Length: 64
Image (cartoon, rainbow, N blue to C red):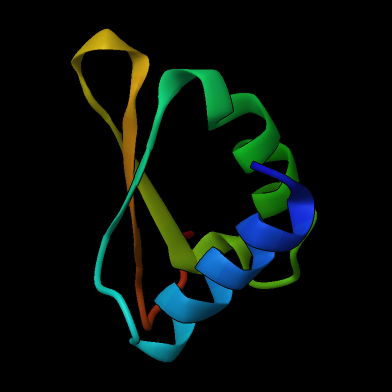
C-alpha cells in the first residue's frame, strides 16, 4: 500500500463510493500518517478491531 492508493481510498470514502474501509494492522501506521495530513481528516472515523485492524468511515459532520 502506498500514499497514492491511500488517498484514492480516502477520496472514495468521501465521495460515497464506498461506505467502509478495513485497514490491516501492518498498513495502519502509513494509513494514519496519510489521513492526518489531509485537511478533512476530522471527517474520518476509525474504529479499532481485535488484532490491530481498523475500520474507517466518512462522516458528513466533522468530529470535534
